[in-house]
Image 1 (cartoon, one colour):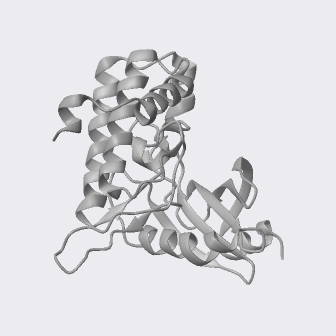
Image 2: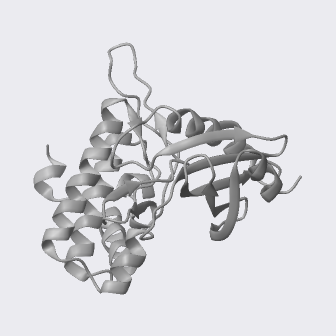
Length: 239
């Protein structure tokens, strides 16, 4: 049974393709029950790498089924067939933040501050649940009709592990995009997952506001390379 037929049985009329990767695609659809347009992420189990299928996908589904915050994309339904996983979610009508910034050549200060505040609230909510996103970037921030932030794509998310003393166990998996990654992640050093999220949040907020999206990836990569390769400051080296 094809995607249109599967979704039709669930009460959705399939629309156009919004995005696509090697093993997943996001389609628009209309919910006959909710009477609204939605987005549907369709993951083909037969095409995904084993590590993703066994580790990342179950984490994503578990976390998406539990989070509920006004600045996180709303999940309406998750269902599976023999070969595919369907995640029905809120539609980011205004697209993602990256494309918005490119189209508008930057963000006005008041808009950037409002979006940053909303994103921080979403990340704090996740961190209070010991959930980390680990792929925070403007591509994964969708915008609703009123230009409110909707954090999406929890494909690299996980729940933090704690040791016997209650301290968070460092993560070792490289996640996210190199242009946004913290230096220790690029270097392959075990990292505190919540700190990694915060590095990314502050980093892309500052650069997008300052450079208006022009040359962002190259600028971030150059800064990350400098931080990873330069000799440490003598003051900190002795600490």
